[in-house]
Amino acid sequence: MQSSLKKIISGAVCIAFAVSSMPILGNVVADAVTLETSVTVNATATGTLENGLKYELYEDHVEIIDCYEFAKGEIIIPDMIEELPVTSIGEYAFDRCKLLTFIKIPDSVTDIGDYAFSCCYDLMSGPIPDGVTSVGNGIFYGCSSLMEITIPHSITSIGDFAFYGCSSLSFIPIWDGVTSIGNSAFYGCSFLSSITIPDSVTSIGEQAFYECSSLKSIIISDSVTEIGQSAFQGCSSVKSITIPDGITSIKAQTFSGCFALTSVIIPDSVTNIERDAFWGCYSLTSITIPDSVTSIGSEAFMGCSGLTSVTISDNVTSIGIHAFQYCSALTSVTVPDSVTEIGQDAFEDCSSLKSITIQNPNCELSYFGLGISIPNTVTVYGYPGSTAQAYAEKYNQKFVALDGPQDTTAPTDSETNPEILWGDADDNGEVDISDVVLMNRVYVGVDEISEKGLTNADIDQSGKIELADSMNVLKLLVHLLESSDFPIQA
Image (cartoon, rainbow, N blue to C red):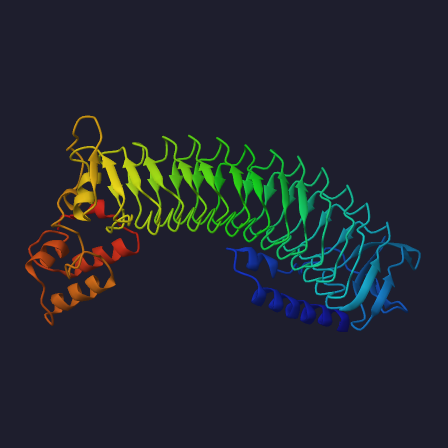
């Protein structure tokens, strides 16, 4: 009973440390702290060895369940206890045995429980026997002195947080046969210099290699079809990446903070580049977005200050807010006619930008009601009567008409008539929370609004400011509505 209590308490302490030191990943944290409490077969007896190891006897095998907390140096797990083979090491069995430097595990062991060696801060080495098939969740979590580990060919999966915080680990082999790498599996392995992901792997979890800042070489096989959010975020030494052909979406922050990244190949299978995917990759000089991609997420290439050219494919329909902000080396951009909307501040602070060509005459320029924020020295190219021309005239930018027929069928009132900027109640050329506040004050009779402000704020065109008007502007600000949805009939 005492050893079980110690295991629960020490496990809770280690998990509390884990939760306080890692970002939240959807349901990952919840999964990490869920303990299996059901027991299908009861132990027949328990005992303690001279070296402080505690064990449980079953009919046909022995499980190591605990270790003397102050055990230090090397510890050897025997292959037989009371004439029964030692086949398993229980969850949290060596948790917080922080003075241990080496654990010898016998070949008879086929199962190692989750967090079995977590928070063994001085542990430097610990080979896994050939009979083990899975590196469990958090098995070496927080083992910051772990320098080498032998993973056998029998392993088929690497669990969540398996080597989280193993900051001294410089190399780890991943053999054919492994099919998945869990969430945060190598999070913070800052000394890891290279990794080869074999053909058998199909998925790489969220934050799997987060902040592996010494990682220079990453080889990902084409068998991988899923790369989780932030999988390689903060891998600041990686210079090149080839994304496998089976990937359909580059998830949020996947390569964010890969400061040394100079080249990346995006395959034709990718349809979506999510937010912050390449945020801060300031060594990236060029990018080609293939025809398969239909959307570029918010801040996808924000801070890519070395980017001199970008090719946007003809199938992209939307460019998110701040998508190319601070791309200070970018000199020209052509937005194809497939693009129907360009988000707020998409090209803000692109200080070297000289021209932008917008080929869709009906492209919505900022779907949050504000400008796309390109420098006022930029020449805007577009068709006569287009939203591009209306934008250029509104913000006093040079406009050059492209050859071709004028299209006047689709632009909305707010895009072609600079006198209407839906939601701009204070008539200052911007839509923000102060407009909502003013509208509410006007509604309750404690403030006044100009005639032009009333035109902008009367979303339902009822002739007066109502609570529904301010609510609709609030929905615009939090992205539940788009400016193209206005006016809304009462």
